[in-house]
Image 1 (tube, one colour):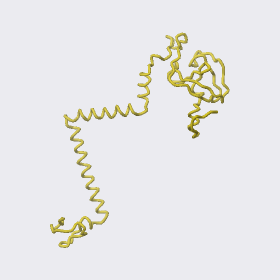
Image 2: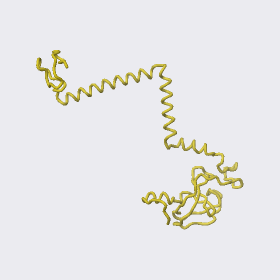
Image 3: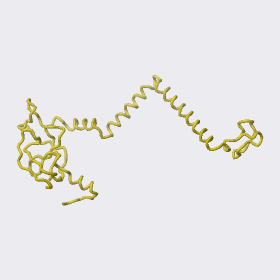
Image 4: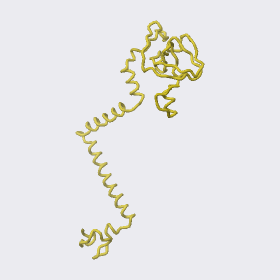
Length: 198
């Protein structure tokens, strides 16, 4: 190794040059060493940033950068849970099978058929809950009412209002999802393992 000041040959373990006395890299105070490292990193980061800017601004590479960015954006949309993928999923699931409305915007009960969007689950009725003859509160009849605390089995169906959740009881009739708490979710939050029977 050579001294940066006088060019004399020095051992890499020496703290200073024996000929001129200049401190070697090993002999520099820690603060100066850190400054050298930070300076080198800043220089290299600047070179990398300049290279990226040059690469992106080059006409030949711009298409590759755009295609790569679009691919990353698409993967983020597809692989994450977000309103856009939820909307696409509902379209692919067949929104055309949703319950129909009349020209007046009212539920068309005459053409209604159940379209299930989930498996049968066990629920606890939270408070008073009306059981209706169709999955909407608009223009339907209450067939009976739960007082609360009962355990029921139901499957989610597509409702007339796509923003609300309705469940068809195994015993018949429909209950609004806001009145139900999934037994599996309650058990999970309480830290129980399955199967859980009440």
